Image (cartoon, rainbow, N blue to C red; front, side, top):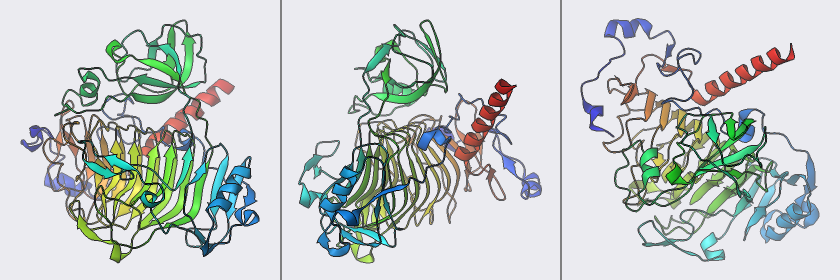
Amino acid sequence: MNSRFFRAPILLLGLLGIAAAAAAAPEYSQLWGEHGERWPGNGRLPDFSYAGYQRGEQPVPEVPQAANVKDFGAVGDGIADDTKAIQAAIDATTRGAVFVPAGRYKITDYVRITKSGIVLRGAGPGQTVFWFPHGLDEVHPRQGRTSTGSPASGYSFDGGFVSVQGDYQAERLAGIVAVASRGAREVKVDSAAGLAVGQNVLVSVREAPDHSLKTHLYCDDPGDIRRGKKLDTKMVMRILAVDGDRIRFDRPLRFATETAWQPEIRRFAPSVSESGIERIGFEFPGATYRGHFKENGANAIELRQVTNCWIRDVVIHNGDLGINIVACGNTVAGVLFTADPSRGRADGGVAHCTGHHAIQCKRAEDNLITRFEVRANYIHDLSVEHASGNVYSQGRGADVNFDHHKDTPYENLYTEIDCGSGSRVWRCGGGASIGRQCAGWGTFWNIRAARPIAPPPKGWGPVTMNFVGIASSQPAIIEPNGTWWEVFAGDGVHPQDLHAAQLERRMKATRLVSRAAAR
């Protein structure tokens, strides 16, 4: 973090007497106010309200049952191999929930959902258990590499036994021919022929040889980015208006559209949506964790290039990588991570490490991960890497860390989280020379632990990060164009869940507009 974090504060939030008097009353951030009246929506505090299934505008549905795996030969005794029977039930179902009754189902290979409207549903994570006696590295051996080229397990960073997989089908529709700044809602295109009001599209920019895009996303403070990956940066927007060559969107841009970054509008029509995995336990052997980059591929679930899908009410036991998300606009809710004591070993700076990643958002946008608990000890608990707009909310764990894995994780939100003992909140991974841990506008709101939380170490990210309501003994620093470390007495900042408050405010505004239009 910028060294200004450790200067004498410019503004302290009240004298001792004032703080004591106000301890019993709700306190509000200067970035938000009581009801969002201080929030412009396109400033240093981003709009996270679009995260999750159907942009938070609809609840995750209860899909009617259409099939039962027992009718396809599944046994569920923990001995018979049920992989093919479960896959056959999924393949034979056109739309609806594939029910997996209570039992222990031995899985020895991939189980994949590759079409829309399919839900893999158990009777509850304590009743329907998927048992994986082997890791993916035993089933489909695959060599991988770290960011510096060192050998690694091919399943250290991605992959999952049970997955929902699709394709964004993101071909180019139009080029953006003028610079629009971050926070703008309108762009100029070379042709609007393939664009229409109400259409969801990907707005995309591509890294230039001089790493100027990464530098922009790091707010001109990227650190060492010599090895930075030349990946596209993108976000999903909905078209509100088409006026000649001017396209207006429903939400502000998270990045500028400099011409050197080849900005364009792409089709966004994922081949898979409205599919889910729910009410299932995932269990792997309790053998000692093999070690960092040596994982056996005990990877439970993956979402890849899908939208409006979900994972809910699952338990993952003894996982190397619990949930991997390489997707946009999905919800993960009600997930518990556990591990056998026998699995622990000292590795990756963790005294009793049982796995690599609990949840990872990698090349992922606008996903909501909520109501989770991490009881196992992972090297990286809640990860973001080259990801934006993702929200981790209403979670807790034994000793949670916010793993910002470098390579431009920007505009992600962590809100209403209990980090447990709080010994490693800011501990992160990521290879050398691919940027600072966190990029611009990362936001941490209402974060608590058993001990006071100190600021991240110097150089962790640029000064545009937002820290609001951190349970800390560090005095407040509020600089409108610099460090924002806003602390509160009493029961902390209100609202406690920033994502929920932003969504409620947006939905209220939408209802008011609808009522006015109906008059």
